[in-house]
Amino acid sequence: MQFLWPEFLWLLLLAPLLVLLYLWLLRRKKKMAVRYASLSIVKEAMGKGPGWRRHVPPVLFFLALVTMLLAAARPTAVITLPSQQQTIILAMDVSGSMRATDVQPSRLEAAQAAAKAFLAELPRHVKVGIVAFAGSAQVAQLPTVNREDLVTAIDRFQLQRATATGNAIVISLATLFPDQGIELAALQVGRERPRGFAIDGEHKEKKEFTPVAPGSYNSAAIIMLTDGQRTTGVDPLEAAKMAADRGVRVYTVGIGTVDGETIGFEGWSMRVRLDEETLKQIANKTSAEYFYAGTAQDLKKVYNTLSSKLTVEKKETEVSALFALVAAGLSLVAAALSLLWFNRIL
Image 1 (cartoon, rainbow, N blue to C red):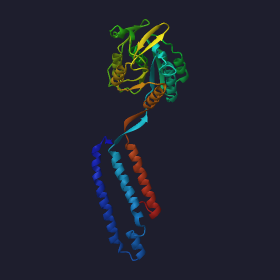
Image 2 (cartoon, one colour; image 1 turned 90 degrees about the horizontal axis):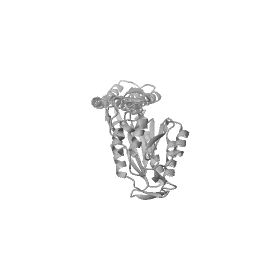
Image 3 (tube, rainbow, N blue to C red; image 1 turned 45 degrees about the horizontal axis):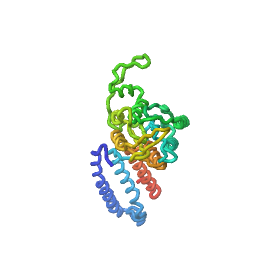
Image 4 (cartoon, rainbow, N blue to C red; image 1 turned 120 degrees about the horizontal axis):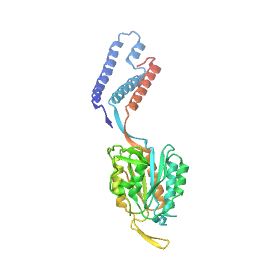
């Protein structure tokens, strides 16, 4: 636990003085008790009747004062809170290698089932968009809270050739930031879009972009699932840098064979290998995590883990209000006990 105003903690040095004051008042009460003629009144004044109960309200009030002083120092603690994440982009590989059956019933079907289960676990207010990628990348479903539309988009996946993991990240970013002028074509030919550009004949001004800290954008995240290595398109590490500069985390999920496997289809074959190293670099560069799923069950567990991570988050939060509440509660209990036992408030 830390404190925003630690200088207020010096006030805790007054606590021992309060204890000494209480002891002095007890001694003073005993000295004054001899002035009373009635023995019962003397005992009551000396506090011998109530016994230990006479100390309970003052002790509770003392604890309340200490807690108030701690609250004044504005304590902070790392606690788990509902995430502010409002949009998640699922970037899913639909390259030909996803037909492989090393993950039952196939990589694609396992990925589809896990994605649907993931959607079911997310809070309804979280928007989800879907980007499908193979040799190119396209938006299969714009971000929406309608889970039925998302499931329909997942069921419509069509397998294609090649794998463009970098394109998937770029299209995901363009979906999250439609006003930033992120253009895949411009990146593929290695040039920046000019400040003024035209879309459908309309001239628009590109907004100035200022990089932020990686992982600092808490309103959106990207989850990319792939079973192969990039064979075409934008360099995935350059695309990851674009995400990092915008503070967007890219969680990567690898599915299938790490060592490589030959996949045959309609008279042609191809060698596919999961590029774990690049996926780890993408996740690290964007302050996210990489997950490996070797089976359908592993894939479901990965999505369950991601659901937990994206719906709750640990944040350093000021808890002075909680301390103030405890102090108020202690004060009320102390006053109530004193009134109940001795017909007075402390």
